[in-house]
Image (cartoon, rainbow, N blue to C red):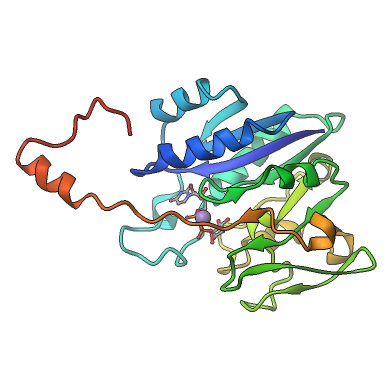
Length: 251
Ligand code: UGA
Ligand code: MN
């Protein structure tokens, strides 16, 4: 099966750094197709060039988050969900371009997390939905499924524990066949905070169906890392003096 990695991304000073790191991790994974979806009105040359030079199989899409749903500068980032329209656009693309005969697995990989190659090995043979723990999320060292006799029987979580699937976006993969069998299944842009993952998974499976991976969910092979916002105070100061960094240098 091919692994389809779906990544929403948006323009910011460190976008190229994030995408370089992720793309070079993905290069280590065989039979992988990267679906990179920009949160923008147009596909940007920066992202197009990065993809063209990446050495990966890829599809470059774009869809803008409707302005009322978009996070404003300075708003706390938990106020609105991120990457929702972009992931749904990738689902739409997969349904148009893939047939139920194509064997595949879909993984939603945000551009700022840290991924071990091991997690891709674990997800490749997903029947319906496979799951594993995610490090550094939910206010814990890790959040993850609790497994008994090879079945998921609960979740180790401390945040909104009533979530039907208390699993971070990075903690599951879905079979392409299952997604094609449920043509309406998608992420709900109006889902309550923390319920985004549940909004999709609830349309596809029950907890009993989940396939625990990563040694019965005892190994951390993906981390919900977040990048510090770069400080560009001096850049702004120099720009005012007409001596800003060379705009022809791509950062
Ligand atoms: C957490 C989860 O790990 C995300 O999967 C989930 O989408 C998010 O919460 C949420 O509640 O919506 P977090 O680290 O807070 O993640 O989110 P970001 O990494 O800032 O954004 C998730 C993805 O959306 C990233 O790939 C990012 O590049 C993209 N994004 C972010 C956009 O496409 N547009 C934006 O305006 C912001
Ligand atoms: Mn993130």
